[in-house]
Image (cartoon, rainbow, N blue to C red; front, side, top):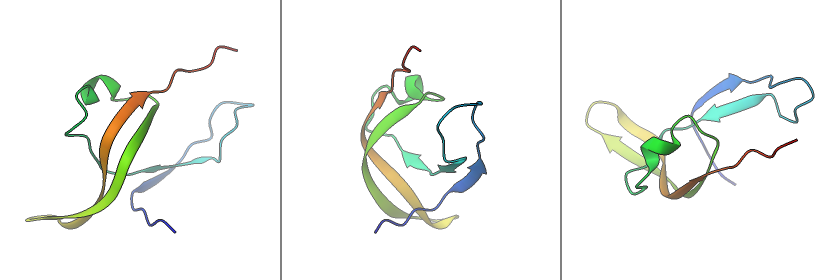
Length: 77
């Protein structure tokens, strides 16, 4: 079983689109992904692991530490 923390936001999607209606935003450490800035605001597939980082001011924070990432091409209808 996985445990994740993040901001849950409702996402109704577009009419007729398959979607659960929710998106969980999780902080991600993308430091080893060379093109991370290019992937920002895109639909991506990311591999890695869930870790807990202990920040001096924020305390313990759950973070997804990415080992690789790639844009997902949207299918043409």
